[in-house]
Length: 384
Image (tube, rainbow, N blue to C red):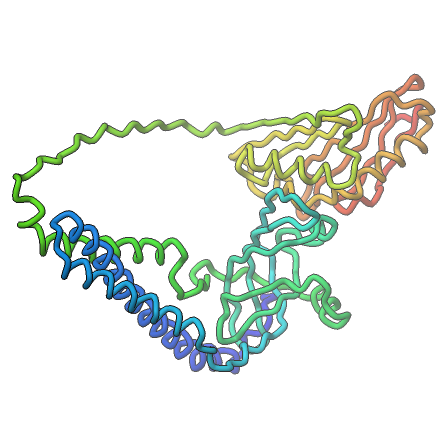
């Protein structure tokens, strides 16, 4: 086994320290939810009292609702001015992590958001899985590939808080190059115990409506003396559509503009992100890149080992390969060029990159590996 940091001492730390942390976080979350529920319900009731008082022309009810709102506003102002107790943030620790998968989305700047699925292997506790999102510079993205090793910073008391160290020290860089980490089981995935933003919004809305409904029920006799309204609205049947997923897929995109080319810095990677979003997967079986066009093909039945991961390719180095092919393979006036990326053959082989140039003299090509290192050349007139 190639895992790191899973000794008996790490097991003791995991069993003794983490449960109390989760228990404290759960208690804080419960108290916060209770406080939010009470405040939302009272606010909803106070606003409903104001509306009801206007409808039934009841001054005491209006004053009561308005008074409660004033008190809530004063409490909020006082609570906002109180300085929180000084608490030192939990100290982060450095560890190694295996990149299980990553997916980048397009951004408007040089730093793009990337979603990572990691197996974090601390030195003092068992390895575990975590899912994070972090902004990575376009130039640095090729350094992070599936099954690669990265240096991360994690918090022992809050293991779901993980940050990839983009500029590790020389010692940790050496450890990352030499380390082999096995994938942790999916059952070890850790997530923040705090409620999500959507859950807080739903709780606030539900408590607010419940408080308002309670006030309306208390004054239902005065509100509905003129009779009951049959407010049953017919719901339109919802329509659903389904489509069967095809076993093969393909997509292409064209870069428009007279002065725009895929050889411009960053354009290839952004275009690859757009194609990944279209086909809804990062694993494809073939990539074709031309001056103004990029296309991908894929097969959902292919195993991952027989595919190419769109975001793992060093697109920033491809223009240099094209320049090398156009100037050193005997094509003096190249009319066109094309890059073909296909899965490598053999166990553990990386993607194969072939750059083809065509001119009056004929066609020539050069081959490179997944790191853009040239492995073979075929100049004009050479056979093979």
